[in-house]
Image 1 (tube, rainbow, N blue to C red):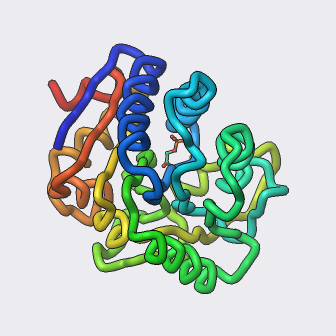
Image 2: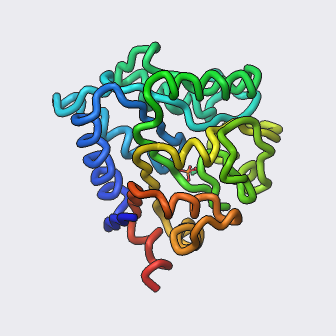
Image 3: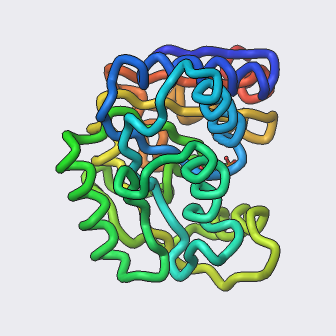
Length: 241
Ligand code: PGA
């Protein structure tokens, strides 16, 4: 495990984007999987800037969805699909055939099958860039999820539902998510975890200190042989203390 700690969110986003950019330059045609959410936004914006400067070609990669709120689609502001399309796929000019994300309005089992098949057909996950929830979830792998879970529909924890309201401008009655499972994520050639802010410090410390503890789903990543963590100082401070 390699941990990179930066002073601020901006510096962390830029360092992580550099790291991903180097991967893109050397690994055209591989599958990337990005978490949606507040944490990755700065990274996605940096990657688009790097493309505008001619440093990388984002359309040379494939993109698989990580997760989605069941029953939400692009038209629901705050869905993962809306976030990724508006903040990344559209401004980065990624061809639609290079992308397969979850449609929360469609059948979750069929969607999971389609996303997993897309990943398999393109040679497996090359790099997964994951955020971490306040309860330690990665994607929607909630605490207690089995390491053998490849993906599918999942009952959302109370924490995910409550914290998730920050993405929406209206009230949704959310109960389920659909996600790539821990098994699929640990099979990715490279895994990147990103976190910023003091509010994540406890869960980050537990998830990095513990090994394969179902109470902290991100702890399953600690035994991955190519695991890189990018944090700002605020998210790191409980690790060093
Ligand atoms: P956030 O979400 O980046 O909006 O904090 C993290 C997550 O739940 O994966």
